Image 1 (cartoon, one colour):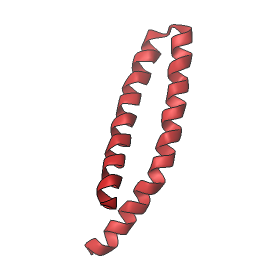
Image 2 (cartoon, helix red, strand yellow):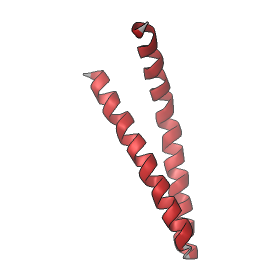
Image 3 (tube, helix red, strand yellow):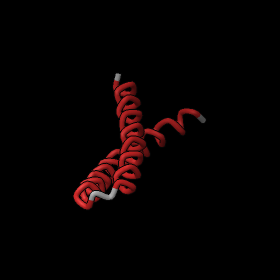
Length: 69
């Protein structure tokens, strides 16, 4: 069973990386807009989301490196 799950997880992770990149780009634009508008609430919210997205990005990158070894 594990032999079947592993390739599916790898495929899902490979598909998640480009989507995650788009989410990061979008949220960076949102942060920029909030900074320009001096909207401190939106700035804080955007920073929190960026931290979560960054964490997910690093986890996926780390997992991908371990797979390739």
